[in-house]
Image (cartoon, rainbow, N blue to C red; front, side, top):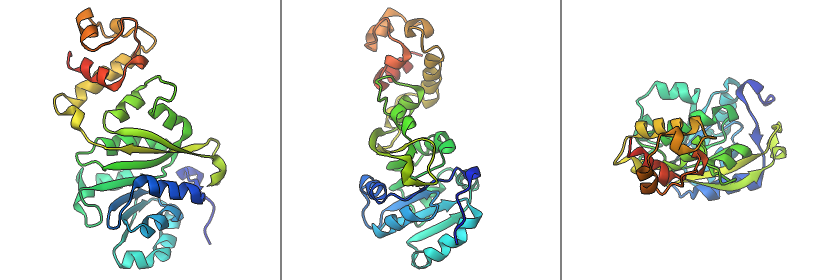
Length: 263
């Protein structure tokens, strides 16, 4: 019998059929496609991924769940549609090359990331997979609702988080998932976000490192006018189509990319 979720692992198990189906639809899965699932938990999403014909590599940290998952999905493991890994996702990645994910049978170069991670891992998940040399083609993530709203800049105010995600892909708010759809229910609502068309094309002609140095510096004094915070000349403001009184939160991705070229 499965025991209760572990607070230490930030576990909240999704039980909404509608939300699970929406994740599958959003991922646009076709038979034979490769998927990395982080934290399969009790396997509700894993079951849907396998039913869609995906080839899944699922990484689960919980010592108590791994044996249960191995039993539940023994047939899929036997026919090699599912590879179940007992490990912390970040410890696991440290043991392999930076792009080991694309060199294994179940995850070819064109792969997708599906995750319902603990809230406290959100930042690490985004950084690790969006900046990878061979990133997923798209990611479908279940995150805190407020975090998803920040990623898409729902209030029309950009942030380091929103610009960072948009630098690598196209985020879209898919669906709100209320706390009651999880066991145990978290204290806040969640949301499904799609990050599509993930790539590094925007950094073909400029340094990723320098871009983010300037982005962080610009937001360090986000209430200041950007021209003062970054010591921008009228020529630069004009070239990047930035209003003289603009603050960091007012600039879109293209304007930040333009600014980075001047430093």
